[in-house]
Amino acid sequence: MIEVKGLSKRFGNTQVLTDINAVFQRGKVNQIIGKSGSGKSVLAKCIVGLHVPEEGQVLYEGRSFHDMDRDQKKEVRQEIGMLFQGSALFDSLNVLQNVLFPLQMFATMSKREMEERAHFCLKRVNILDKDQLFPSELSGGMQKRVGIARAIAMNPKYLFCDEPNSGLDPQTSILIDDLIKEITEEFDITTIVITHDMNSVMETGENIIFINQGRKWWEGTKEELLNSDNKELNEFIFAGGLMRQVKKAMTGRS
Amino acid sequence: MGIIGHIGRYFLLLKDTFSRPERASIYWRRTVEEMDLLGLKSLGIVALLSFFMGAVITIQTKTNIDSPLIQAWVVGFATRQSTILEFSPTIIALILAGKVGSNIAAEIGSMRVKEQIDALDIMGVNSAGYLILPKIMASMLINPFLVMVSMFLSIFGGYIAGTATGIVGATDYLQGIQTGFIPYHVTYALIKTVVFAFIIATVSAYQGYYTRGGTREVGISSTQAVVYSNVVILIVNYALTQILLI
Image 1 (tube, rainbow over the protein chains, first blue to last red):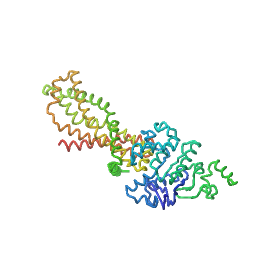
Image 2: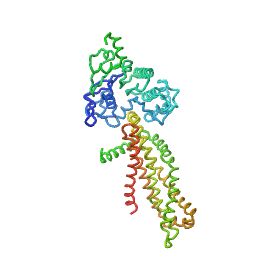
Image 3: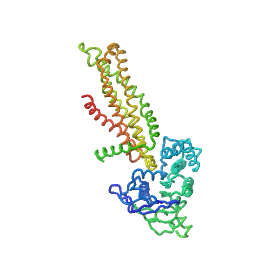
């Protein structure tokens, strides 16, 4: 479980996040949604320690990340897997080497065991047959799969996915969403997905946090999302015609 | 950010770079790869430049000191001294700052804007150490070799130009390059080379590591890497010459 308490972050004179409080539950796909520029990616980067907040705490199983020393932070980071918006695969390494990378850096296992683990992860995301290709030879969806395989290689306790569907067609998006949900349940991971894709929210969202103007504006489940009377949330989720029709079909009102 | 801020951040980056590696064997393997990429792949340009540099030094020396009072072997002597003391260590360092420095800044800068450095940090890898330390080690190990090749080819280029054009005889030239040879001058040149290698790798890596934005900013970082490396090399060259030769 990850807990965020009173987190605030600013860049120069720009206040990006203000007093964010949230709990991200284990074994669930927790989603942070919001408009572009609302501060959701900054929140994620504060949680994983890439940004240092001016105020507040991030607690990993009750341990404050920003109060940890360098080695303790390193240990926590080895329990984190992250899927980046652009996949962030290493261009000079092939698919197998990308997945092997965290194992080679940290795992205390033999070369053969590392390869078995990497093959297992690639098989889990259905891309084992592409293990010798380089990232530039893969489609966007395949790169995301490899990104997920690399993220789960070290058996993480926490999985962060930054816009996992960006740049993907709807079908591939659903496959990636399903994969994230399956992996979360299968390995009992605390997963945090940052997205503004409402399809993804309706597909996998269990605990949803809406960030607006750098503040936590709303929190609930996807069922509650459709019936919320929060004005800003409604403006965000029903901006598209498809979601308006979904609401009409489900609630009988537009 | 002001210049003091940049200097402070540069030294903080160096501190991270030299912190304990996660897996020394991986760092060593990367160092060997970088020696090939940053060093051996520069051998061609270094060889070409050095040969013609020596040839030009010989011809210019001869045309500028064409006097019956000056002995013929002085051309060889002047070519050797200019090559060893200044041209090979400094000019080759400036050329490598252009070729290798821009390569380092562009590579690390691209990794930054593609979030690959963030990926390393989140995994718990010391990204500064993993990316920069092998480049520093590789440059400091391979550049002295490049400069020694450069010294030989420059003096050889002078010999070929001198004898082919007939402005200096082979015997006079060979006598010149052996006259008054001080081995310490080679040591001095190699010390400069190692220091310049460190400057090229670290200044360029600094520019790349703190790139923000997109491809345009990667280009800007690459250019700044070359400019700042050259400026620092020239200033440090003066300081080292004063410290080591006077």
